[in-house]
Length: 267
Image (cartoon, rainbow, N blue to C red):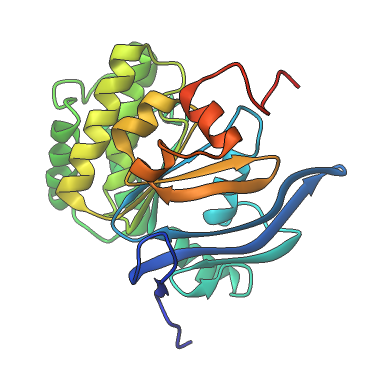
């Protein structure tokens, strides 16, 4: 199948920049409750974009649509030029190989030590020798500061270490896109800051399109090249990070500054 792998973004968000993750009018509801209500969004290549919004506003649902774990009720999700739900299951499987995902808790296999957890994608999806695998795994574990913890089980290390191990595993296949689902969840402020610095360093080292789902404003300030704000199922704002944090939109200003006064309440 011949596909066009990139779309060129020409509006206010990154004039002329290429995109390979494109959502068009995406709708999703569960048991009649609307979660995504016409989301249209292009993610800029080789940049870090954070998707911000209050808890329970559909950020993780959006991520699951991007990676093809949820099918939209209406609309289109294009990854690398292909509508992910208009290709065969085998093609969708191949597209997913180009993603790395860091889940909230690291999602490590409890029966495997850190080394085997990080090696798992290489053993499953490649024909590399164990010597080649070891070189790749140890390189990434070293990058996240876990080279001395390779034999530890997930239940023997801290939450921050599990997230770092999950990050190393997300990178071993050299993905084009890395998705982060609330990477700061459950971490104290210091470890959150350190993890954000690590994400930024790895992006500078490896490149790629990073999409970070979070509601933590400090993390977004540390990480973001671009910011999208999701509320009530819609993208309320999407811009370069500096512009977002100086927005005059009442909801965006309230949320990004953590103010009590504004359209966002306790409901």
